[in-house]
Structure formats: C-alpha cells, structure tokens
Length: 307
Figure (tube, rainbow, N blue to C red):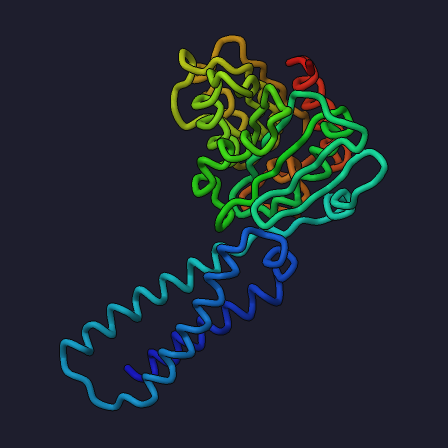
C-alpha cells in the first residue's frame, strides 16, 4: 500500500506539471481558483508521500481508510486533469491589446472591454463555454465594443459557468451608467446566461433586455417567463450543440425569439481556442464564421437601443 500511495502522489505531481507546462498562460490569466487547487494538490501530494515513507505498519481499519483515500485521490487527480482549460489562440490574443478604439482591462475574475471614445447605455455581459479561456471570446465580441457597447466577459471558477451564477448581479452594480444589459453565453455559458436573464429581466435598474445565445439553449422552459429579447446564433455543423438540439429549444423560449444558423460553422467557431472533441467538421473558415457571428451580434444589440 505504501507504494500505491507513492504512485498516486507521483501521479498528482505529474498532472500538475503537465497542466502547468501545457496551459500556463491560462493559469496566469484565468480565474485563480484552478491555480489555487493545483498548488493545493501539489502540497498534499508532497505531504502524503513523505508520511507514507515513514509509516511501515498500520491497523486494518487504518488500511481500509487509506484505500478509500487513495480512490478519492485518484478521482481528484482525474478531475484536475479534466479541468485543464482550452487556451485562447489568435486572433483572440491580439484582440486583447488596447488601441485607439477599444480599451481592454483584465481582472482576476473578468475582462472588461470599453469603447475608447465613450460608451452608450447598453452593455453586454458574456459567459464563456465550459473550460474555455475567457480571452478566447475577445475577438468575436470586440466589434460590439467598436459599435459603442461595454462588454464584460466573466472568468468562471474552474471554467464552469454554473459556478459563476450571481456574477452578473455584481457586474450590474459596477457600471452605474449602464441602463440596460444583454446577457450572452456560449454553450454551457449560454445556459447559465439564460438563467441570469430570466432572473434580471424585470429589474427596475439596468434590467436584462436581451439574451444572446452562441451555440446554446436554456435548460428549462422560459417561454412564458422570459421578458428579454432572444437571439440565438448556431452552426449548422456543430457536433455538440447540434442543429436538432437548437430546434428542440424553440418551444422553451418566447415565440418572438430569433434563430440564425451560420452555414458550415461548428461549436468551436464561437471562440478562438482550437478544436474541441466531439465537434463537427467545418466547411467555412473560422475567420468567415467569426465575421458573421460578430455582425449578427452587433445588429441584435444595436436594435435594443442605446439611449
């Protein structure tokens, strides 16, 4: 059992080293929770390995407890490996640079994009897809900022949108000049965005007036409760949020909801983070898809008003 414990501890070290070697920029720029858990994993592995080396004899019950801890540790290590995020790629990384039109400010829990020459009163709050680097959405959302809208991209704990529920309420208070919000999200982020929009569409101050889906759909029926305007953009070759799933979501949204499909686009085309397992095979370029998605998003948000 001592050797098993040592092997598990070694596996933990290997996983932490692998994540750091392959996703270091995301650890630096992402929500701090994942990095903190990796450090904790490394420290616990070192302590466990040291104690295992000293303990030679154990009671039966202590041995059983150790087996249970080994099993739980393997599950924890596997989870840490699975949580490794999809890292942002170009042109999203270049879009993170401020220029004469857009000011980019990065915080530990969010990215804020502000029009350099003044913003109107309609802003966008965006939830990334599961385990996707928040920076991956800057290029596709930047045209919204160039059109005059503040855009706030959430950095989710562990890259899971459900762990970011409640973030929008805090963001609302941080931008008192904004009088209306569009809440959007990609994939799982869109599902959480729907929950937040449904919860804040009747706020007396700065309500959610729009819900923007990127390859996503709600988890529950909101057809009679949601007051915000809905715009759904999807890809015809998406292997994850497949067209059939998007079509099946129509009855769960208000009848006025607008659905647009980008011909030949896939799930990973709604951000810049590389290929995603289980996705379809695109028949158009990523640049072409991004331009279409951005243009349709700007048209939707602009139509909601700016005053």
